[in-house]
View 1 (cartoon, rainbow, N blue to C red):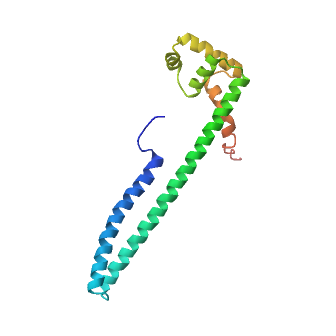
View 2: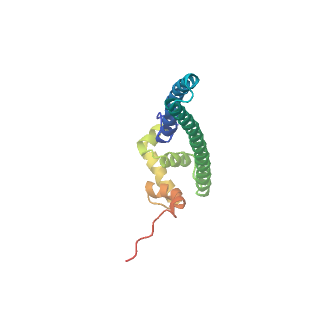
View 3: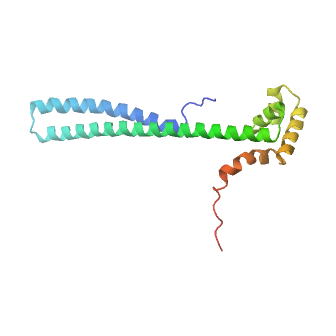
Length: 171
């Protein structure tokens, strides 16, 4: 797995957590100030206003913590769904490779091709000549009944996307 730091999906919870820390600091300050002023002069309009501001900040922190929790739960659910989809796709690929009767070498080359590696990269990883990899890819494509890499990859993605096409507008 490649590490790329904070991804877009992880920036929102991190930013929300940072905001909550800053807001909690403000709550501590305002709440302390409001309590000390309330002790000195409970009925002053300024004291009541500060108390309301402190209360609003407390509610803001509570809401922020709740929202952070919801966001993290949602991300966890999406991660589980993605892991399930990855596993399901891997099973579909393995079953299809078996149906096409790919050799172990063709299997490895096919997986690397599906991952987007080019002939030179596949050859380097496998310690094989580029011509050998090209021949294996040709054999894989023939067994799959496709003419090239794009059709080969599309063979596995097609069922996932068949409902995603928008209807053409009428005349």
